[in-house]
Image (cartoon, rainbow, N blue to C red; front, top):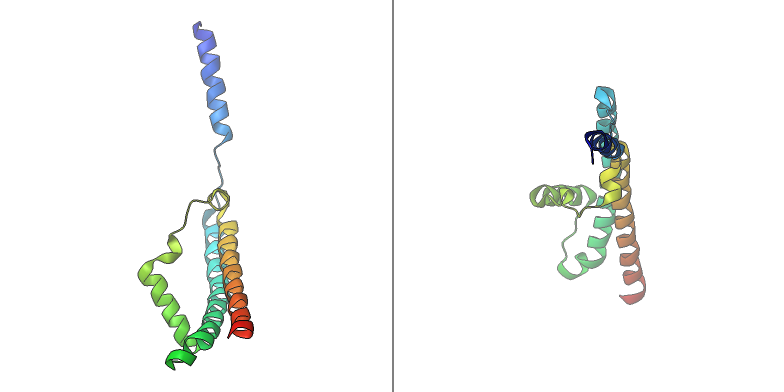
Length: 132
């Protein structure tokens, strides 16, 4: 190969590498919107988690041990456990989540948590209704 072919090959390689790069800049306003959205979605998601957790606690733990927890107490326990274990930041690599933008990532992670809690609620209700 001569020098002209090497230059064309390097130029073509550079152009191919640029295709995979993601150049999205949301700026200060976009980052502020993502922050507001994440806090705005965190409140109903954590309240759903507290409601589901309180119901599951009332169905399974209170009849055995006699210890009752309200939504506020369960929410405090939930936040303390999440803070101590850092469970919310530990997840496997998911290409769809990693490639999503910050707004999509917030909505996707919160909706997955809601589906998880609602399915746990449904399983608990089925067990309480038909098994116990």
